[in-house]
Length: 140
Image 1 (tube, rainbow, N blue to C red):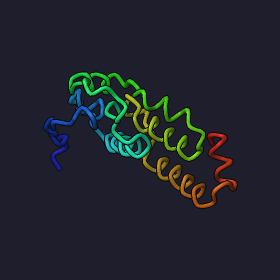
Image 2 (cartoon, helix red, strand yellow; image 1 turned 135 degrees about the vertical axis):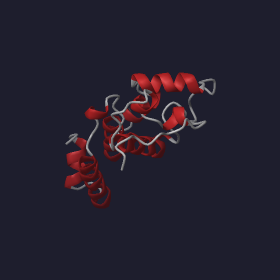
Image 3 (cartoon, rainbow, N blue to C red; image 1 turned 90 degrees about the vertical axis):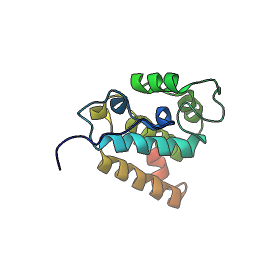
Image 4 (tube, rainbow, N blue to C red; image 1 turned 30 degrees about the vertical axis):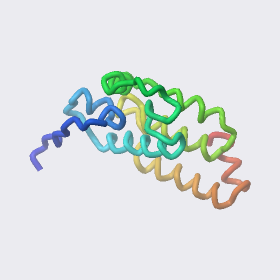
């Protein structure tokens, strides 16, 4: 109501989930922070952990390093591992992760576009091997 952004205190695991603009304490925070968070959730489903903290990652990464990687928009190694899979649904989910976790908030997908893509994934899953899966294989 005041037009001021909600102050978000640093949580102990904030380096795992916060968007780059949250670390910069930007006054231009928007709903795109939620899209970043959705990308984290989708990544967790695909990789078994948050970016930079999946089970296959070295445990010595500390919070400050993870924050710096997030601020710079570095893609976690798990993206490449997921990209090597041949499952069109997992590849589409990875595309959603990469498009919701872009460093600049204005470059992230809009919520309605995410919903549209998730609906396509749902149809592809439900129709297994039908037209929706062919569309996903084409990246479309």
